[in-house]
Length: 125
Image (tube, rainbow, N blue to C red; front, side, top):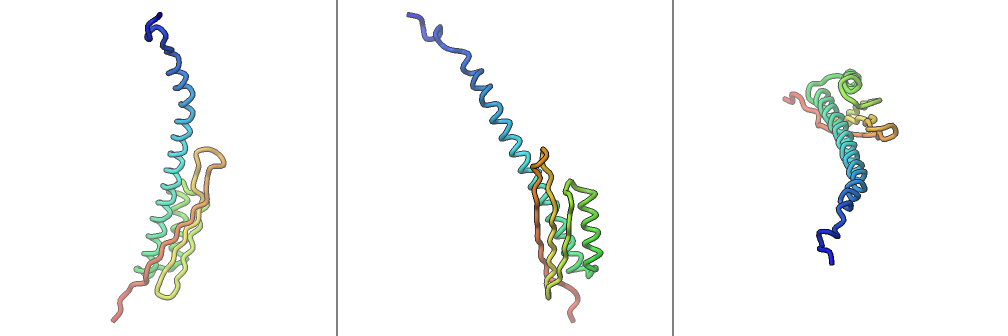
């Protein structure tokens, strides 16, 4: 009777590697795609927060800040088709940024929408 070492099939580990490699690659691409979408959302949130601060705390005109925020998102980030809407409502300034976050391959981009709100501040005697 042959020993267990002589009967062992050494090809099964390479077969497992060949079968699992595509699964790991798909998981890696999915993780990278999620990171791209999260980064785009973080960029949009930072611009929305800055725009809200400029309007609420510095008293800048909403139309000017919206135009400069859209220009910044268009030129300095991977975000596509940004739209910045600034709405003063009573004592609060609400900034909404809508855009498309890029994808790894065609068809994997997604729509993002981020909203920030800040109270209007200023000198009050």
